Length: 483
Image 1 (tube, rainbow, N blue to C red):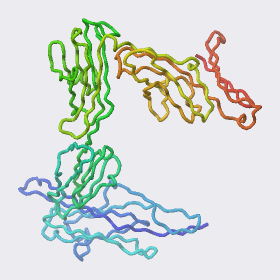
Image 2 (cartoon, rainbow, N blue to C red):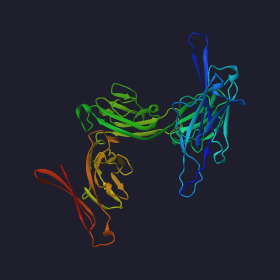
Image 3 (cartoon, rainbow, N blue to C red):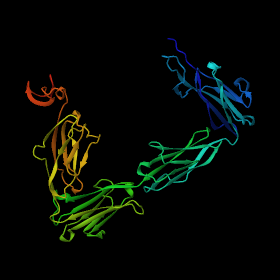
Image 4 (spheres, helix red, strand yellow):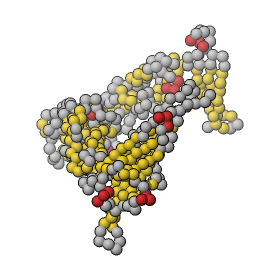
């Protein structure tokens, strides 16, 4: 079937660029201006340049060059088209023509019009754009009312102003954000951006752009940081030089404190012993940023532990001068308050079976030790992720809840003690195997067996072979892998 297409012609875009270069053998500079006209059209457009009402022709004016740039950035888009059923859209191509004004003369300061035409195809009228070139024509320049980085508390109002310091014609100012769009609560009033009652979700880079189609757009950005503070944890590290897993009198002991914060480097830590502030001494050494720990970790080293050092130590984290609530954790150090953890899986919990689509708990408990740390769960195979796409999941009580279980969740799971909120020693770990019974015809015909997966390793031709078999409702599939 023959197709009927309709032509298309966008409004052209005209930009102005200027260069100033030395002319050898003379005492003046040559100022050259390029007027660049770009349009999307279908069919290809014809360009006409005018100065005022006068048609410009390269052959009749030595101060003018009209050409198509050698390297044109081509923009294609699907043209609007009226087609019969089954007809396809045609694609428009961006076309560009450049008007070069060489060594500007007084008469070159005038109104310039770029007129584009598809020669009345489908009764599409010509379109044009006009630009007034004066000796004041300049590209935009801007200045922000704030520093490159602004740090605020949640709930504060934020105001950014993007001041235009140069540019003629008067530039147009726009605001954007990266990543993502401007917050829904954002208000733009001319060059000013207003953010009401900011939240951590509003953090990011805010960009001001000024455009007047002369030269390149002017851009500046500001990084908005919204203070946050969560998850204060502690670590008790016995004397690492003695490879010890318990605290002992006469040996060193380190207490560490870390909080997840933004900005991390602005957190202030304060240590207390039985409620009284701790200061540096021969026996108590404060480390504002412990190089042996994760960045942003503060430590208190107790040298040559004595009975006088047995106490309750507190670590407080805050932002000085901020309304963000401070966080505090207490650690009791005594001869009976700290002991290594013991990890165990309840009887029958080493292997857990579940029907595909069901829910199941994997359980791994700290049955002894003080204080008792959280349990971290992960897959034993490095390439496999936990549900939700995480590499590791923390559980305070050691119970990992899996919902809507699928076959790709089948396999070995590792549970191990966390190195925080307890003794910072070698991790205790064990494994739990999850077996998934596949849904098949047995769900509808009870006499048929469900799918089970079995792996057998045996010697075949003096080589180890792994056979994985899937027993379905009516057949058995086996795959052999040489080990």
